Amino acid sequence: MNFNYSKPSDKGSLILTDFNCASFEKRLGIGEYYKIIWAKDNDLKLTIDSCSIHLKKNHVLFCTPFNIIFIEPYLKGAISIIFNREFYCIRDHDHEVSCNGFLFLGSSTPAMVELTPKEQDSFELLFRFFEEEFETKDHIQGEMLMVLLKRLLIKSVRLLKSTIVDPALEKPKMDIIRQYNLLVEAHYKEKHKVTDYAKLLNKSPKTLSNLFTKFNNKTPLQVINQRIVLEAKKLLISSEKTIKEIAYELGFIEASHFSKFFKTQEGISPTCFKKKILNIY
Image (cartoon, rainbow, N blue to C red; front, side, top):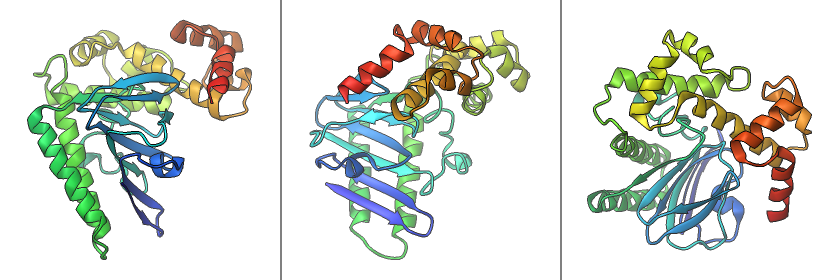
């Protein structure tokens, strides 16, 4: 199964696929896509940002355009919705679904939730609606698909909120966490300290640390460091830039500082990481 809706006027694209095809473009799209992957029938093995991911049956994974993902051809047991910013921009429509900085861009580590039997039925029905709408070719097809996508995103946000360490965390505090995540996304190349973001939010670093402990046990500094590493991996894998050029782009004065930082985070130097990835692919 592989359905693809595209709107030539703005290059918007939405894909529904079970990955049962060889073409990389059909499996993941070419370009910057958000990906919602459901391990519907069995456990799945994926590679995301050069790391092996074991996605258990009835777990759903949410990847941003920044996550580098590899899925084997003819993968069995998965179903996915893939869309680009031109089809639905989560930043511009954040007031509708409230997933920016939470479901997506809330961390460099892809968000993941487990579906209960009731939620499995709900997702099954929603994906069936997607399939029916892809088969209906008329002038409002795009609008109908967008409505279904919004519903999927809202349901997913609710599911992810249920996994928070402190489910009673009030919305204003949740909004601070979302704002922090979005600020990191905007400034991680030049701002590497929690104090930088605390000032922007008019909060103390301790306040941010306490909020993140209630959210997902990840520290604010880990959010910054993981985002820098994610971009570093992307540049190492997909660009011809030298270590020195990458270090400078990511806000490090010296290449040696960047190499030390990367090895501390990943346990391997940037050079060895690149060689390892090139040998795999």
